[in-house]
Length: 314
Ligand code: HSE
Image (cartoon, rainbow, N blue to C red; front, side, top):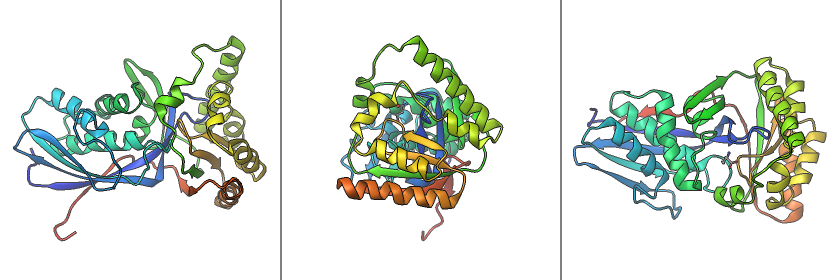
């Protein structure tokens, strides 16, 4: 047990669903990322502190990182305590995997400090308890890419079956309108049944997108980024969505859509210059409709959660 060291953890934002792969596909981003600090204690219990100004609960069972750590400690079966300080740079309710970053970062850090007993798949399983607290449902399409890095396919969550996918170099342009969409609400409004003809289209697109990533086929990725089931319902919660999507594609983006449950919108691009143009177009749309926003141009993060020892004086 490493009681002496304090570590810093960087947990990346993630884009879940990747348009057609509701609850089964996701990728990790290099920007933004949450920063946390953790150390172990001989005094049992989980103590959480937020240094980010967000009014998030700190009681372990109500906090997403806390819920993940409770599951972790239950299986570790050791009487230890954990002190965790969280500085969120990924805004809650952004659609960029904010809750996943907290819970994934927390369990990766705890695993490191306790001797790496658990596999990445175990850590995803623990961290999904945080998603349950956040949205009422266990889903792994933010957690898995956050922990594994890169692009991940979650073929099944019960039992877990996670398949890391390779992909070609990609630039990701993201706009985060400064409105909050709660994942629980964005799930609530979804229809519970789909038409067979829509399901067939969606299956084709998911298979096409996965093949496109594996074959480094930008064209195939682009034509597979289509969602006939979730996007038509959820996009009504996001002002300017259609204009952003149309404008971005006209500017050469491969395609994109709602990031996770929104309100952020992401676009995949082959070239940095295209991503720059897409960012400009996204900003223009939101300037026009008068909604505050934040944009990012970033790339796929292939490391996942990163641990850094804290050197004294830092
Ligand atoms: N797959 C989840 C959803 C991701 O779309 O509800 C939430 O970030």
